[in-house]
Length: 482
Image 1 (spheres, helix red, strand yellow):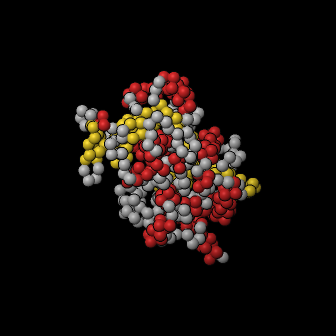
Image 2 (cartoon, helix red, strand yellow; image 1 turned 60 degrees about the vertical axis):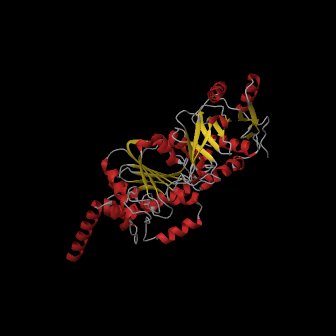
Image 3 (cartoon, rainbow, N blue to C red; image 1 turned 90 degrees about the vertical axis):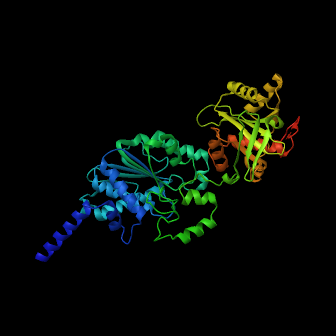
C-alpha cells in the first residue's frame, strides 16, 4: 500500500514537471521514438514563446518535404496549446478536409491519452476527429480550404499546405481562390491575440506565403529553413554554407544527389524554400550584360568581358515594342512600352522600359508620350484586344506602328529573344530603375506572376530575327510566323 502511494506520488510529480516543461520535450514525450533535429527545436521554442507572449503573432514556416514540419507543428502543437489553454479555440486548415482531419485525429488522440495526466484536461462528448471539444470549453476544428468554419473563432489557426501539388500551384485561379478564402473567411475568424501559423512547401512565388510577404510583410515572421544552408550570415540556425538541415535523416550527399536529379525549379522551390529561381527555364541571369551612355549621350558603351565597345547613337536603329492591357485593377496586367536600339553589329540594347496599369482611354496617350520621347523608327504592337485599337489609332495619326499577330504561345514566341540572350547579344541600360524588375520577370518566366515585359522582349526578338528591324533600318510589314 505504501509502495503504491509512493509510486502514485512520483508519477504525479513527473507529470507536473512535464506540464511545466518546454514544448520541445512534450513533442518527444507524446511521439514515442521521435528525436528532434536542431531545426525542430528552434521551431518548438519559437511557437512556445509566441504562445506565452499573449500577443498577436503571425508566422510563416517553410521547409523541405519530409523534414518534420507537420509532425512537429500541426500534429502536436494544438494538443499542447489546448492543454495549456483548455477553454480556447483551434482551427486547422489543409488543402482538403481528409488531409486536415488527420491533424484533428492526431491531436485528439494525444489529449485522450495524455491530457488528463499532464494538463488535467479532458475530452468532451463531441469527439468527431474533424470537430472535437474539451470539457473546459476548448475546441479543435479541422477543415479543407473552403470548408465550413463560418461563425467559429480561432485563438490558434494553423494553415498547413493549402496547395497540394505543382498543378494547383501553377493555377492562378486556384491561388486567387485561396487568397479570397483568407481575406473573406479565415482572417475574419481570428481573435485579437490569435497565433497564426502558415506551414508550406513553396511551390510558386505567388502562393499564399508569397502574397502574405508581398502585401502584409511587416505583419509576418518568416522562418525559412532550406535543405542546404546558403551561409551562416543568412541562416537562422547559423549553419555554414552547404550544411544539411537535418543531417541525422538526410545527409549532404543524399541532398546533393536529389539536387542532381531535380530541375533547378523543383530544387529551389521545394528544397531551398525559394521559388524565385535565379536560373529560369528560358532566361538565365548569367546571360545579362549591360551598357551605358557617354556623358554627352551621343554614344553607347557596351561592357563586354574582353573589352568595351562604343557605338554612336545615331548609327543605331531605335524601335519600340508594346504589350497593352485594358484594365487597371490590381490583378490585371501592365501595359508596357520597351524602347530598344539595334547596333551595327546586331546587338540589342534595351534602353527604356515603361509600364503602367491603364484603362483603354489612357493607352494612346501613354504610347504617344513614349513615341515622342524616343522617336522610334518602328513601333510593334500586339494585334489583339486593346492593341488592335492602338494600331488603328496610329494609322490615322500617321505613326510608324505595325501589328504583331498573336498566333503562338508565349513560350514558343520567347525562343528568338532567348537565343539572343544565350548568345550574349542583349544589353540592359545599367543603373535604370526598371532593370531589377525586368530581370526578375525574365528569370521567373514562364511561372512568374507577370510576363508583360517578357512579351515586349519576345516581340523584339522576332522583329530582329525576321529582319523587320536591321542595322540599316526598319521594314514596312511585320507579321509573326506560326
